[in-house]
Each structure stands twice: as C-alpha cells, then as structure tokens.
Image 1 (cartoon, rainbow, N blue to C red):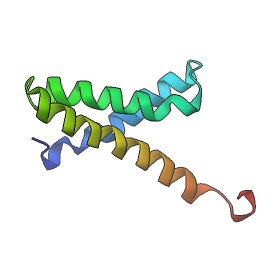
Image 2 (cartoon, one colour; image 1 turned 90 degrees about the vertical axis):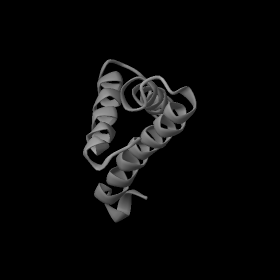
Image 3 (spheres, rainbow, N blue to C red; image 1 turned 30 degrees about the horizontal axis):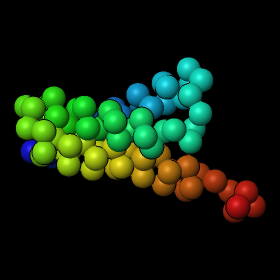
Image 4 (cartoon, rainbow, N blue to C red; image 1 turned 90 degrees about the horizontal axis):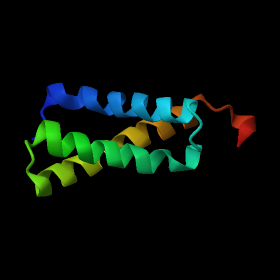
Length: 82
C-alpha cells in the first residue's frame, strides 16, 4: 500500500496535470485528470494490479494532488482577489 516514500507520487500527479493544462486543457478538468492518473498509478505501481485497493489508493492520491494545488493557490492569492 502507500508507504511514506511513495508520497512523491502526489507532486508527480500535480506535475502531470500541469503539463496537460499547459498543453491547452481547461483548468476545470484538472481534478478529473488527477484522479484518473492517481488510479492508474495506484493500480499499476502501488498495488500490483490489485484493482480494489489500487482504485481506492489512486482516488486518495488524485484528490490529494488536487487539494495540494488548490490549497497552494489559495494561500498564494492576495486578500483583495477574493
């Protein structure tokens, strides 16, 4: 399952999503892409094709990447931009 040293996957997913956004994808699709990549990585890399566990872990990774981006964006936003 998800070990501490596999936490690097969250910023990796974030970077992949940013590449999609740079290539022209609308930002509103970012969470969907993050969850899809999280599921793929969860099933293939982390759980060795254990589908149930991989999907669960992948959803957690994708949502964590989405939260990391959203939280960072909100912290960096100035108060007058609300």
